Picture (cartoon, one colour):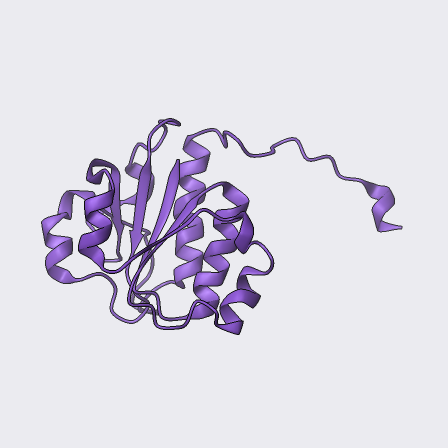
Length: 168
């Protein structure tokens, strides 16, 4: 199973959009506190629409609590400062749990923590002379869909039939 892990997320619509993606891709969502918003926040719920009940979601009081609960061998830290490109990582094992950890929108992941896990850091190539970073929810989508692509989109409907009559 794939897992998106958000370290101290601050912007409710980002978390809501990521929750919606998780619900649509059978991906678990892990939230590491403190959060920059209340989980009852109206904009959080609006961004996630009515998919919150379709979501496998976990809460942790801090990073240490999260690390104590998961298999760290398949933990990937997503950062623009990572040496390795996300598409160079083998994520093809369907029965493996992959955890993709994203830092908070303003400061990312703690620098020391990233140094401790340097071999597990991955990045999305971008032109950072024009922007500081990509949007968190867009980044999470890129990473999760790369994992799903490598896993042949197992468990997802790939045979959608378009109904022209619905357009009339």
